Amino acid sequence: MEDPIETLSFEAGLRELEDIVARLESGDTPLEEAIRLYERGSVLRQRCADRLDAAQARIEAIRTGADGRATAVEPFAAG
Image 1 (cartoon, one colour):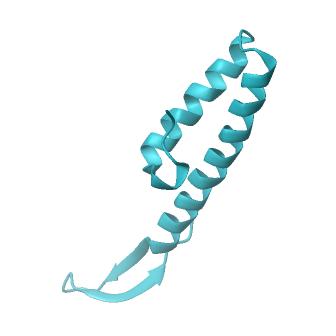
Image 2: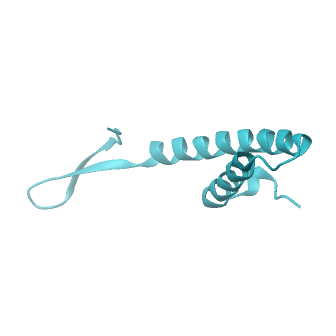
C-alpha cells in the first residue's frame, strides 16, 4: 500500500518519484498502471517542488562584521 503523499518526507517522495520514472521508462508497465503511476508521479513532483521552494525561502545568508558576529540577515538568493 502506498503512503499518503502528504506524509512523505522530501527524500522518500523523491525516491518514490525516481522509482516511478524508472518503471514508466521501462515500457513494461500495463497501460492502466502506467496512468496511475503517472498521476501519482505528477503529484509527487509537485510536492517535492513545493518542499524545495519552502526550504529555499527559509535559507538566509548571514553577513558578518569584522568581529565575526552576525550584522545582518538577508534572504537567500539562488544563482
